[in-house]
Image 1 (tube, rainbow, N blue to C red):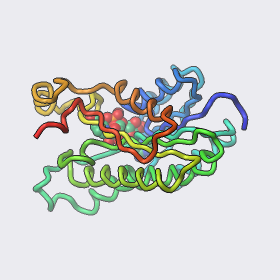
Image 2: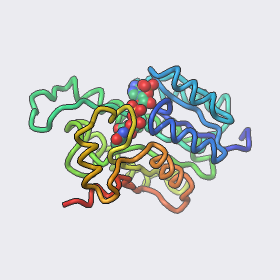
Image 3: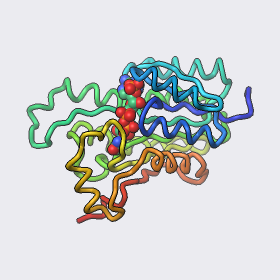
Length: 244
Ligand SMILES: NC(=O)c1ccc[n+]([C@@H]2O[C@H](COP(=O)([O-])OP(=O)(O)OC[C@H]3O[C@@H](n4cnc5c(N)ncnc54)[C@H](OP(=O)(O)O)[C@@H]3O)[C@@H](O)[C@H]2O)c1
C-alpha cells in the first residue's frame, strides 16, 4: 500500500455533516477524498482547507459512480481505509398524504439513500478488506428509528439503510466494520427553515437544543476509531427519542 496515512472517502462531504466529518478525519490524520455532486465550490473549499484533501465530483445517484470513485482512489492513493456516506435527499410530504408519494418520489430517494451506500460499500470492499481497519459509517437518521421524518420514503430509506448496516456488519467481518449514526435535528442547510420544529426541540428535548454537524462528526470519528464495534446504529438526538 502506498502512503502511511489512512485514506477516507466522504460521500456527500461538500456541505453540512459530511463537511464536518471531512475536517474531523483530516484532524485525525486521514487523507480525505471529498465527494459531492452540485456543491462544487463548497466541496473544493472543504478539500483545500484540509492538510491532504481532494475534491471529486460524482453523482451518487448513478449506480456506476462508486466504482469510478474507488478506481480513482486506488490509482492515486493506493489504499482505502474508511468510507463515510453522508449524501442524502428527501421530499417533504406529510405522512397522511400518501397519494402525493408517487414512484417518482420514491425512486431518487431510494437510489441515493439506500442503493448509493450499497454500491459504495460493494465497490470499496476489496480495498477496505486490505486496510487493517476497514470501516464504513453511514449517516442514517432518527427518522429511520422512530416514527417521524420529512416523508415516508425518506424515513423508510433510512430505516432500510440502518438494517443494511447491521446485516453488513455481520457479513463483512472480521476485516470490515459497518456502522451507522442516526442524527436528530442538526443545524445544516437541510434544516435551515424548520423553525417550528427547532422551537419544539429547544423546549422539549432533554438537552434543550438542536445539534451541530461537528457533534455528529465527533460520533462518526468515534466509530471509525472504535475497533470492537460493528453493525450498530448510534442515535445522536439530544435525547429527543426519549420523549413519550
Ligand atoms: N440535518 C439534519 O437534521 C439531519 C438529520 C438526520 C439525518 N441527516 C442526514 O445527514 C446527511 C447529510 O445531510 P446534511 O444535514 O448535512 O445536509 P446537506 O448539507 O444538504 O448534505 C447533503 C449532502 O448530500 C450530497 N448529495 C446530495 N445529492 C447527491 C448526489 N446525487 N451525489 C452526491 N452527493 C449528493 C450533497 O452534495 P451536493 O450539494 O454536492 O449534491 C450534500 O453534501 C443526509 O444523509 C441526511 O439525511 C440530516
